[in-house]
Image (cartoon, rainbow, N blue to C red; front, side):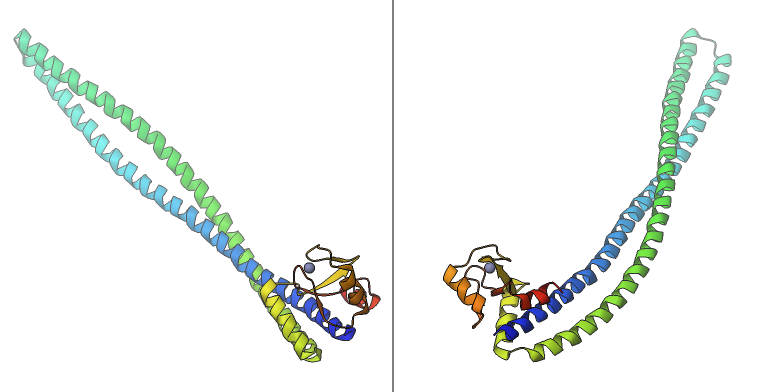
Length: 244
Ligand SMILES: [Zn+2]
């Protein structure tokens, strides 16, 4: 039984290496995706700001036009003043001019506010465009790295799959099926050492009688708590495999 369990431990070592490669294989593309999402967000903000710039500019043109119109009205009003004879008419015309001037002052305040916003948005556009460029460079760099890494991982995976097939061929078919079932159900580590009467994977103690049997290693034993295939971890032969 010891030799059969040894094959399972070898198989588990191989499977764990495959598993960690598969995890690494997923990590790269998700790093790239995160960068791409960030770029998209910055680029969207950039686009919105550019649109806002256009809006501000066209609003400004119409404000300036209004100011010009008011200037013309004020000038016309002033010219009219010199021809007015009656006091009543004069003060009415004066009041009208005052009204235009007040309106003009309001528009000029608006123009100043707009100018400030324009500078702010322009500055944001500049910063965004710089950030976008940095992200773009990072993206290209990471993409290349991830691609190279993927090629490496694929190579290692192919080698490991071959190794696994060879190990599985050595395994006892019934034990192999059992191993696959447990691994499928638990996800990883279908085989666990028991040291000092404690299953080292689920950290629960096993009954002393079971532990005695386990040390003899005459039959397949499963942890009564986590159902993993267990072996005596202090056995020198097993230790060779788990601490190569
Ligand atoms: Zn256990």
